[in-house]
Amino acid sequence: MITFQTSLGDIKIELNFDKAPVTAKNFEQYAKDGFYNGTIFHRVIKGFMAQGGGFASGMDEKESGESIENEANNGLSNKRGTLAMARTQDPHSASAQFFINLTDNDFLDFKNETVQGWGYCVFGEVVEGMDIVDKMTLVETGRFGFHDDVPKDEIIINDTIVE
Image (cartoon, rainbow, N blue to C red):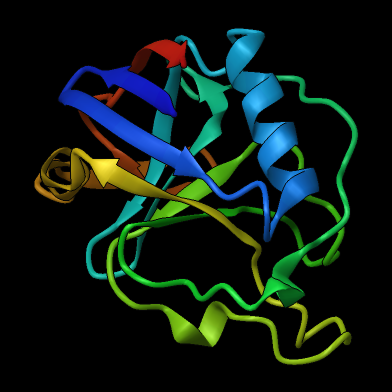
């Protein structure tokens, strides 16, 4: 269990080590190392997802570790309340950034091992605090530099507790 103590309240996350062992271990290690402390949810799109894990306050990008293998072909679906890894166009480029699905986003699921079909790896789910995640969508968003959908009032992960 991992708890994010955010500026809006606590979010408790259960990781799925059975279906996404590499991804869950990677996320847990970032959490144990305190990497997420002081980071913000830098992209929030109502009816879609809330993304975090890559930027400190002021949209200051954090240096993350090596990319991990995409485990999206694990049978888990991008349903409301699940956590998945964010990545670039390269299917195997995820490192520290993640997102919480705000609705069922089945179109993000694994379809096949092509660049377009890999999908986004689900590795955990919010077990407590979805009301806090939903509060994120009430914060006004806008453009910040090259980034869209950035909350104008920062939503900060103040502390991370790994149990």
